[in-house]
Image (cartoon, rainbow, N blue to C red; front, side, top):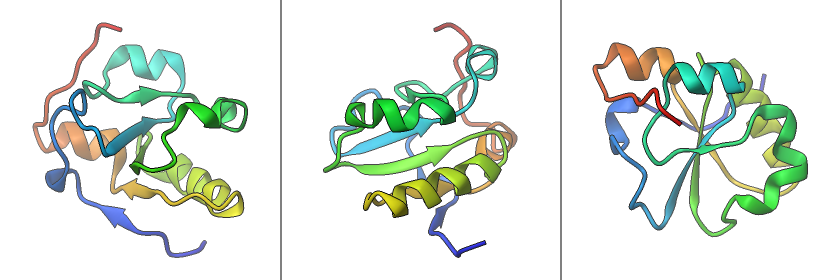
Length: 107
């Protein structure tokens, strides 16, 4: 597996709602999203990203999150293939929740 850049959850804002130059891309499935997500995250399940890539600001710093980082690495491989930059959120939502960062459950 290629070495992709990762960022610890502790270095990210708790809320991405007002971040104009950063996008947190949550690529988990809808049921995972409903169970808990980060405020202000952009939710596009992994399998839908190719058809919805235009929804992701190409000028923003993109952070990709899934449950534990496995799908995020697959997403980063895709981004590399299409010439986009992104960073993996190390440990995914498991690490986010373990660090005590806030999670929303309503859509």
